[in-house]
Image (cartoon, rainbow, N blue to C red; front, side, top):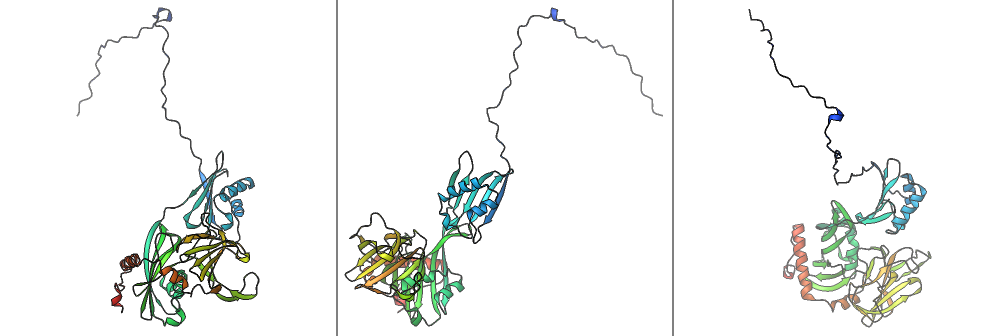
Length: 415
């Protein structure tokens, strides 16, 4: 059996009890110091209230005021937002696909209103003691792309089928219209190779793509076009590796909306001769001289609206009509080069919308701007063949690098 626990033993431990001191016996220690409390210099951060976000794309027929009302903004706030946005962007240009985003506190007070428009641009209105507005524009990356298409019916259809921007067919028609008869000379099966540049933010394309180089085989000849990357719009056309002419499009990247010849007038409704070609473009788009020459007239001409006319030699003149503005430093008698900006697209005179009416007159008589060779002769005299051939070689190399297919590097290989 285990032994039981031993009985506890008594141990004598001296204990000192505290002595009570009465107030009258306490020594005089003087006034006691106050307790010091240290506080951090860092300010207390304000707590941002939670925000709710409302966002929607503009649908056909809707207005900015309608969307802001749907987002819950009161009428005075809607009016202030419209004024703030209108100071940075022409609200008449709103169209389906633009979007409005409203951030509000939980009690419905608006904090920010953001309007996303074309080219990735966003206009933001911030509510505070006073409304403030800022424009946020993306910083795009310029990428170079290449593609190849086989033409069976039309250039437009061939580009569309190959996944290449079909709008390039307009640029090619402008450049080669006076040199190549597409209807008669193209038998089908021609190969078209293109090199172009796009501005992108992530996977989204900003703005319109721009052609850099085109090579088209027609009837045993190789037609090539090199567009510059300096924004001048001045392009050089080559045939079998030799400079044919230098040409600048009047409105770069615009849509050809009406051609030369008889047509039903869009305003008056009767059938009459259309003495030029029309390029539909946004108001303010730069208009460029198509060939070197001397400014002959700046002013107004009835239904043409604001006009600039340029003489090229003694018998050829180009007319640029419906302009919204003309550079202040442009003067009558001044010499201009192909690609120089001589105005801005507008809708002055008799016009249904912003466009450039472009005419070529020879001995005072209108001719088809896409088929006349007089401008080619004027531009050819100022072309620098050495620099032009160098640009052609660089464009061919860049196309080969991006496309992986070879173009004849010398004229002798094609002859």
